[in-house]
Image (cartoon, rainbow, N blue to C red; front, side, top):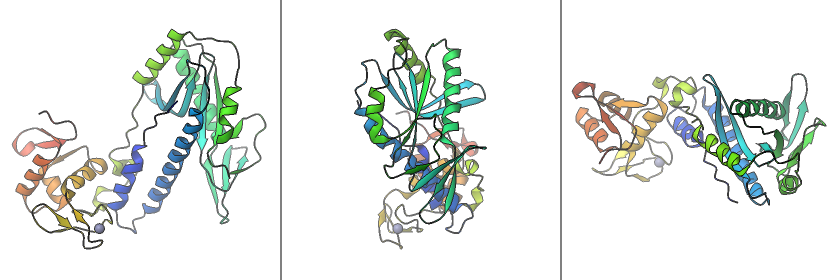
Length: 319
Ligand SMILES: [Zn+2]
């Protein structure tokens, strides 16, 4: 079984924000730390997916990655990995942590003891899992699904050492996953084939999209802090125009073919979901409104409005 897992949108977006900020900006370290955690989390999940994929499941088993569901108009919850069988729903929480982690109670949290001597406080994964368990149970209940939810905490890094583990909570390393899953035979069959198919449809159709854009608002950064102009995608240096079609980077000597479009994408991702002529001209430091008009017309964006009120948004152009 192959498990499809989409790359987190922030993994591509945060580097664009970092590229557009000065290296000494006060939020740079926070962004780099966040990017590192998201990258480590994602690679840990993909890694654990391959172990789940090696497990011999009953025929009807469904594995979902990055499930994001809504319980009420103001409340959604997200589960990294959800396995649904005719007998149970299993929430798997994956953590990819190096060195040693120690469980602390009252209030529950995790302390990561790094070999460098530093300590990092991490949200308690057990509390996280228990919260998600009750969220999922509520979602099931709202839809009349009589399924019992169980949970498991998996360490993606085989070298993570764990201290003071609560006795009543299952924590395993990823290589133990197929064995654990194959031996998991709780309770009797509660769902029919039709019911599993119905739940699968509901999960896909009710899936919520995580939308952190524009990133400046998400990270409380003023868009006036952003570096303007056309930037090298390789080293973030400001580009020099070589000829009509090509720009040259004075930093790494690489050519750039389409820096204008990349700059427009940066604006949409970081500042605002639409862009007009003046915004394009100022953000990319184009020489006049004609250059901005040409850039926007050539871009894959959709034009809205007329004359001076014209603006452009992302989407598929009608051909
Ligand atoms: Zn460069």
